Image (tube, rainbow, N blue to C red; front, side):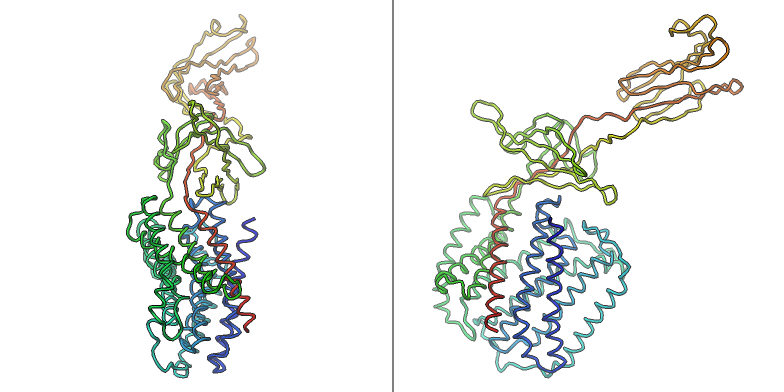
Length: 601
């Protein structure tokens, strides 16, 4: 169902960007640089809400149904949808400044046009196929690369031309804003969002830059660590600005009154920061500062709604949205910085032989019905069941009671979606608690082919040659020209030849086989194959060339039987529900703001 609801919301959010863009272009063409803002404002915040929900749905989809190992992987396609949302939020806040103070006209035009051009760029990235090697999203070249590039360049060129042409006509502000005014810090927040969008866009564009200029640019180290390192400072700045914004006044703020209003929230935030840092062992300075800023963003906006707005819903849209945003960032900080991989391999098998992606510190191998310790649990793989194109695996999580007996806590059912055309996809299964999630997905599993037939190969060899199979090899040692004593069912009138083979299995254990070629009653020929049932191998004569002393044999080998096992990864995400609660509250607050703007218009 995620595929049904997530893409339409993102595309609808993209589509809403054209409305403020069209108003802005009309304003530039007609020389009405202020009048267009009023009708464009509700559409802008509506787009913020719709596209924001679409982006968050993508995160929820990745967390619930994909094996990203979390809710956000900084995948290029994810980034392509996030960046226009960031600039759209900046544009919406610049519109509020313009409506209130009549300033920031140039910045507003710039932000609105950049937002729409970024939507065009997102379409180019996802539909041109340029991200095919760097994104887990399966997008190929749809044959529209030239059209998409022309459309993108046209709207960029149109925007630059009209802004430059009208630049000298833009209304100029009489004086600089006070550094204590609300409009000043709203403008700063818009710039911070724009800088964040630039950093994400630049790194996401490495495949495009490499293709155009023949370079080999790439993010340094792990992609998630790279983006987190660059963007955490911006998240801290935005959090502090979200916290103080509504306590500031337009034009100039009475600072003693400002600090008095903010003091309760600041005190609570310090207490929460110290408590959580100590209890969760958060000692990284930048994480501690972000913990303080996000806590302050949540407490300050909740306090503003409760004390200043008297708990009324009317006019509370911004406070509710900012409160949710603070919780969202707080949930991101706690769940990512404190996430723990508990699936360290405690089996006797080295799973690194499966490939470079299989780390013994992060993946555990479970044989069928074996029980191993994993974190605070004992886990056991209980089997699998097939249903249409899905294979569901049952993993039991158990704990030991006071009597030393294992008791079942819960069972998880991660599964594989079989797709011969696109490749098999592992989908996770999550145990939800109020304070944490235990996220489990299959890293590797042997897929038994029910319709597989034994292999049959013909070999033309001479004495001393070797035949190799998948699980063994056999040496043609000699011929026995009088094998009557070795085989039953031969009469005195029969002529027979036996071929002596020594077969060595994977443990280098020797086995002996002797297929027979028989001339029955000296009139017609027949073959008597010999087999080794434990290895599923059978060998028999196919023919003899007396002149060349060449012998033909057919080797039939059953499909190898594997012990049923899985390799899985399990991650604990503490505080993840803070993130989801923040998403919900932020979305509600945004749409309350839209309704408020529509009523005012």
